[in-house]
Amino acid sequence: MAAEGRLRSGMVITADRLYSRVVTRDDDAERDLPDAVRRELPRNGLRLVAANTLQSSGDQTVNASTVLPWLFQVLGVPAAFVGLLVPIRESGSMLPQAFLTPLIVRVRRRKWVFVAGAVVQAASVAVMSAIAAFGHGTAAGVGILAALVVFSLGRCLCSIASKDVQGRTIPSGQRGQIIGLATSAAGLVAITLGLAIRLLGGGDLGSPALALLLAAGAVLWVLSATTYARVVEPVGEGHDDSSDDGSDASSGSASSGGGAPSWFADMVRLFRNDATFRKFISVRGLLLVSSLSPPFIVSMSVASGTGALAGLGGFILASGVASLIGGRIFGRLADKSSRLLMAGAATAASVVAVALVIIVAIPGFDGGSALGATVFISAYFLLTLLHSGVRVGRKTYVVDVAEGDTRTAYVAVGNTTMGVILLVVGAISSALAVVGVSWALVFLAVLGVIGAASAVSMPEVSRGAAD
Image (cartoon, rainbow, N blue to C red; front, side, top):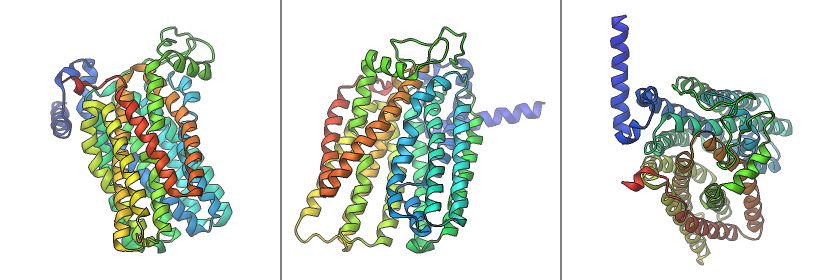
């Protein structure tokens, strides 16, 4: 027993030292935590970094902008199916969130919601792997899209639960760094994947190798679920039919006190009564320039004559390097002021998009040249880098701005609303791209500038801003 105690004490000290090396800690913020949570902070922080890294790494193997379109081409899936990948993946994980929130707030330890979501994603990717190995043509495309729908549901569960678990276990001032560390680590995986694709033959990579890649992704989600299950989470504000301590209409909680909760009524109430939430959603809806512009850059690159092998490998590597660099930098900036980070990153992304449009319009520009390919890949890198800033800032803001079930409602209702906004803005930008891709980029840049100006006027919620 004494030996076990010494071993446990040694592990605690090691975790504390490692956590202190990778995260800038704030003693005042940590003192606000319950004693049990404070004791577990270093190990919980490292577990969250590891689990989120594994999940983000798994995402790289099912990338709807690179890997899955590539797989569709290899399997002979009709080209029309490719356009459904991103909307299903993104909107499919956002739209159900407000509906699911009244069920999730009944769970006292939200980490199990994340674990369930990770298991669902693992199973879905395993099905995709089997289809990649044995499927072909339209049937394979339908099967993969169906699996992607289920995958998005699992992603939805993880999205709702992760912010709440982080809010319960990590103090304000350290949350952005946790997200940033996981983003940087996932960037390393993307770099490795990009290099592997180049070494294995680029466009000639066949379905057996892709099936193995997807199988590896399924394993990563299983490991993420296992790691997340070890997080020590305090019992939260779960609700059942007899409880009367959860819902506060004025705060916008998505839970009802008794009977079957009305998620739609709670969503309307949140929009009507919570000015901070309305502001956050309006800003978030405008800051899509960094997320929706990269596919248009790839399209513009191909149309300008950039080689497929150089382009594909370059874009994947650029994405990985951007995540590696951006995660660490933006994590710290988010803890200083997440709203200013969103504003600054969106402004810079808009400038990059407009600058690319101007450069491509210069007479004699040749996208097929080495210089032309460098311009496109550099613009893609900068936009991906800045998207890391917008994303880390947005995630940190929503964790810091609310507590308990109100935070869960912010995440769920916000993501459901964003699912609709994403479809609308995506449809408008796609329609403009029919006229010319440059018009789509300019449209997104204008929205980004408006969103950045609005972000500056948001309430300040970051602890670092007061230092």
